[in-house]
Length: 582
Image: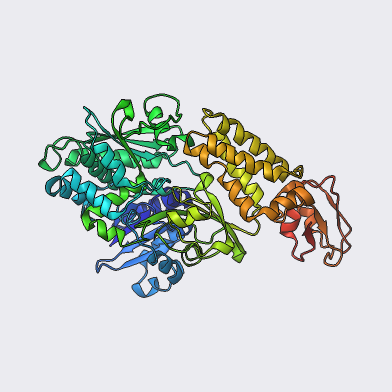
């Protein structure tokens, strides 16, 4: 029997380490014939800690939200009793997993990321071997071209085109760089791959390096990802020892090695020229293009940059063939896409679905619907650089072209779901505050323009908005888009523009009526107690942290609005719907 504990960041945060330690002690103290292993995140973060039990006959039992004691009891139970436990994964959750097509994360949550032999058992490094022994660099690029793989970092630029441009350059040194500086709020696609299948990235980078003629690779990863960096270092050491990195790989004349550069977490370093500046020890600031990195990149040498998810698709494409990958998705958006499904969703986590799947299918069939069965209002696609898609457009498919048509972008894959309690003006303010802080300051339009837009939004959400603010926001957005050098500034206004486009009535309510329809902006709401429903139970009075509620037992209570801090405690504890929000 083999017992596997999910040990991604989400699993560890949910208590997986305690589960593992108790299992380890139980096995040791009772001399049980059980192999205890760890794995990365399988994607169902809402069910962590997850424990998989592989039986000798090959059957798998998966248990979710477990504690150490519970899983020990399950191990010691008879097979008949095991089937009765409520900890077994539900049919609905398993169906949500089965609806996905796992290519980039096919090994995540399955193999031990710190054991090379388990990666090799899943045909690891066979794609690299095929390239070095059966294909020329141009053959590799042609295979990637046939796959239709586009960069998964946000822009969706054809991968083969970047590789081809770098391969044609004549230079003494070329570089293959991985952008693992995942900065979008709510995004964790790259982190999950690095933690769950680090050899997959190394193989993808080595294949790309062979295609363009690079001998050195650099992984630019967020310093806030310590577990990812740890497992990458382990994988790199194993790969060097086994001959998959270093000199004369697979007995050929191909030499390639990789090193890690830990970044400080600057969002702007997701832009490739800013990333290169950071690698060179400079402040992360974009520069004009051309020349493009493929011509003049790191230290002035030809450089190719792709993100983690892009590289993770490459070994599968080489093994299975480009047409097998392009069979998934749409005509122009081929393959699958990873999404970090977060927000007001029942089943949050990491998912991988074919391009072209409707948003509502992602939210309801895979995500399980809206938390607490509230009304679906919108979904933010593409993080702070993306746009907001309202509920009435939930038939929109997740592909580059369809999202662009409605003012959103694919981005790196953040998908933040919102219900009817979300204020769209406040949501736009939140994302603009993020991009304003992350602006490198090089461009006046981005540095000053986002600040001015943020000031307007901050006025609106506290009830100080005025006529003309909406139009001013739209005008500033156009100027910032036109005047900014890089993608950060050019896309910073997207959340504002998309919310104005689809939720203009909420902006008008904030400005004209001084009301927040979602009852989310504190300064624009008032708590009152209903004469009809209040029975004088006193629960609201006891819950109030500032003693703003007064009243005798079994008599109508009142709220002193001068003292009320609008914390909502009275609203939360009232069982009779007597506390109302105006």
